[in-house]
Length: 178
Image (cartoon, rainbow, N blue to C red; front, side, top):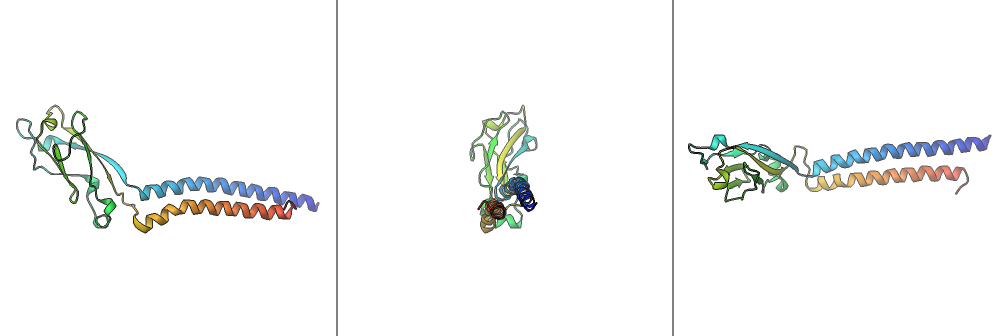
């Protein structure tokens, strides 16, 4: 009878450890995903309509300013060098990538984008163009905060492993395996 209770305790301990590991593994995936999201820049493609910058005859008004929506810096983003949108990828109406300082200019400190009056930008058949860039999301973490966040999933996995080993060795000691 005492031996049956010991076996039952060992089996229940193994089941508890198994369920804990399954839940822990599911949580590690979520923790890792959230950590990656808060320590990585977010890629964004913004559509720009050139019709407001078109002059009579289809040429481009080079002084017309477009401000990129997510590249505008709030006070906390201005202090983080990672958050400065320095490069953008710009495609014209036909989908061809155009050249910085030849077909467009971008001022990173103000997030102002100007289209230049060049042949590749004067396709009057369509006014829709696209700008792709990386920016800091509202929950972006940098510096030591990002370093600590990146360590969390690993330490969580080590804690799960340690708890599983502790329970299993404790149960196996009681049943006489060790």
